[in-house]
Image (cartoon, rainbow, N blue to C red; front, side, top):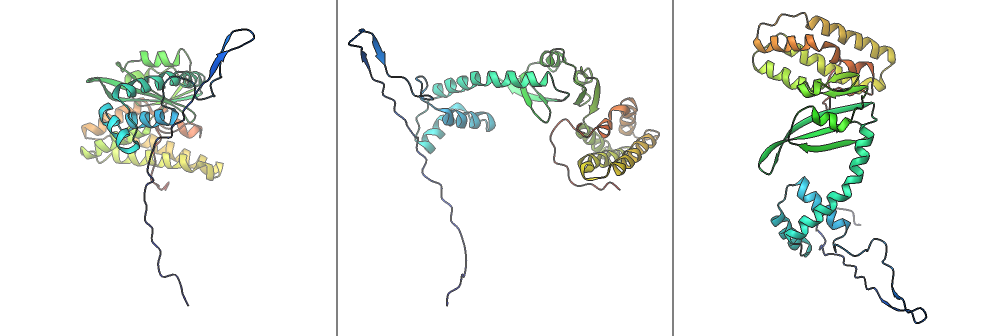
Length: 294
């Protein structure tokens, strides 16, 4: 009698070779009218660049997601796929992709300019050896990235084009504080980072308590859909009460005093997300670890 004594696997990659479709068009002259004619081009196989969408997608992904140089990308395509792709061909291909993205980008901008809620952030970016800024505008439906040489409010004005969202979610940078929205939710991810900095700098009174309160508020927002409305209201009232108590503390450390002064000024914008479950507590998609509400 036989029985299974073990299972194991071995994984191999298939040989990767380009799939080439050759198009031959025939034509001639009509014997009746003497006009020249030519066979129609198959849809998707129009003349022009020989490289199809799969090649364009892979090259774009490797170039912009993994920062592979043109030279290395040319070698990689030859070594892995047996595809001869010069650096000039790569540049032309990426330029073609850029043109194809203009229409989708315009649609994203159009949706942002009618959105109820917009989250904003920016970070440094190097362009041709110079420092610039990568701007991000996003909500739960669309996301727009753009690199500009300035960090000023003019970028916001250009993108939003006069649109006034109901809610703006961002950090405390001056350009963000001058947002065009009706109300403002301060990004708590940035505040948690600053609280931790104050803790590391020696504040043991205000920053630790503030950090715990913010984490509790974020945990409540994550769980509110599975909690009874009355339970959510009780937690919200408790959190607001705790915030009032915290803002009456008198920390002795410089960093604690700095945070206290900041939060006294923006207290109305710290827990705005508790009033509406559609408002996120941060301006970026973060994975939060479980945190007790009690």
